[in-house]
Amino acid sequence: MTDTAAAPARPAHAEATVRFRIEDAVAGLQGDLASGLNACVECCDRHAGANRLALRWVAADGHLEDFTFEQLRDMAARVANMLVAQGIGPGDVVAGLLPRTPELMAAVLGTWRAGAVYQPLFTAFGPKAIEHRLQTAGTRLVVTDSANRAKLDGIDRPVQVATVLSAGESLREGDVDFRAALAAAPTEFQPVIRKGDDLFLMMSTSGTTGLPKGVPVPLKALLSFAAYMRDAIGLREDDVFWNIADPGWAYGLYYAVTGPLLLGQATTLNEGGFTVEGACDTITRLGVTNLAGSPTAFRQVIAAGPGAAERIRGRLRVVSSAGEPLNPEVIRWFDRHLGVPIHDHYGQTEVGMVVNNHHGLDHPVRPGSAGLTMPGWRVVVLDDAGRELEPGQPGILAIDIARSPLMWFGGYLNTDTPAIAGGYYRTGDSVEFEEDGSVSFIGRADDVITSSGYRIGPFDVESALLEHPAVREAAVVGVPDPERTEIVKAFVVLAQGHEGSAELAEELRLHVRSRLSAHAYPRCIDFVADLPKTPSGKIQRFLLRKAEIARLEQDQRQYVS
Image (cartoon, rainbow, N blue to C red; front, side, top):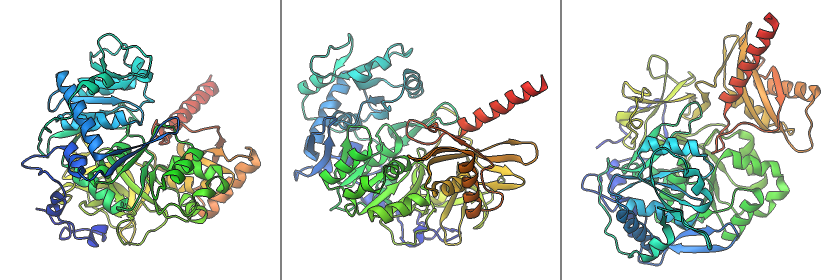
């Protein structure tokens, strides 16, 4: 077995402080990757028997319900019986198009219990987005509710539907009444045993620059999910944990559902949409001590002002952020106004989380850094020729596959994966190592701006803008320029009480220039009402860049004519 402490690494990474052995990680499972295991057993059955809390659920109307591991196990068995009655077998794909409810948790666990593969569908998806994902995965059955049922109308590929009905609602012809079927099903179902390389999740990329690709997730990924919860999230037995990410996305499904249950810890689902007031209510009401989410949500907390968050000051022990880089100003604000460390974590749907400022490990944390490599992985920075780079040299973040025993991604579903080559998986993100081994994020490779021979990372410019009190959100792109190749352009959403003007634009330019350099500042600034984002909250810079190029081409055509 591989021991990453002996693997060459340059510079020193986080695994140097924790001796990682894959044997120890496997020993944390009830089953075995070679002889067989079941995800529902690992996340539920083995923790049952002591009336242990597994789920805190806050309904849309505000009422709270608790569920034990025994209750989730029984619900999962009923779902598994229902699925088998509908012809679902091991390896078949079952999708969930549901809000954050106990039925969602039952659908996930029941799918795993039957040896099938769970596919998340975010409830904000439209019919075309859903259709593409169902077709890509060859999905056999969708569990949904009445509010989302119409989105499945007109999908070309036939799929069986089980619907969660509310009181007084009618069942579509041909659908399965989810609640009635579960009520009639027994609470006994022998878990189907699968091997470590067999799938238990079928994910999709976010599709920020093209159609989403299928990401098969094998059962051996459970080892990586558990490591993240333990080392990066720092989940303790006395924590009340809440990951606000939606389980329709990777961070939510991996680390709001699978991860905490895998460690035998209760998770929290809040059916209502995120608001600052609602989040503060939940934290106060449940006594949340360990919080995880995205920078988009945390910037909303900052925008609401210190007064709005005053009642949760001192309540949280740690906060984790993932999905996009965490700006240093957010870190400072949380320390100053909430008295809690908020740490940046980096990962992808394809690999989970791999670079983190770990709450559960002892290492220095540099503000603005993505962190250190998680034990069990070897992360490198590559140049265009595939050579590993020294600290201070920007390149592409990559995974050294042979020396990363927790690596589980083997390629996209039924399509080429050019990112895997020469023994590395290239993430497509531009970064550089610092001398202390931490990773500095520059941006997506496509987002890096080349101006007058300089490479400028949009993250640094955006972070500098966010330090100005007039700025609530910012996105920075490069737009074509005949003299400089590209110039930096910023799209700024102003904080309440501020109005856009030429004077404010100049003030922001000087503000950034004084903090970065004479070349890395936005020569153009547009004040906008909002920024284009994916349903999971990531800023879509490519849409801003595309619109700017189209505008320039239109201006050029008008000039020529």
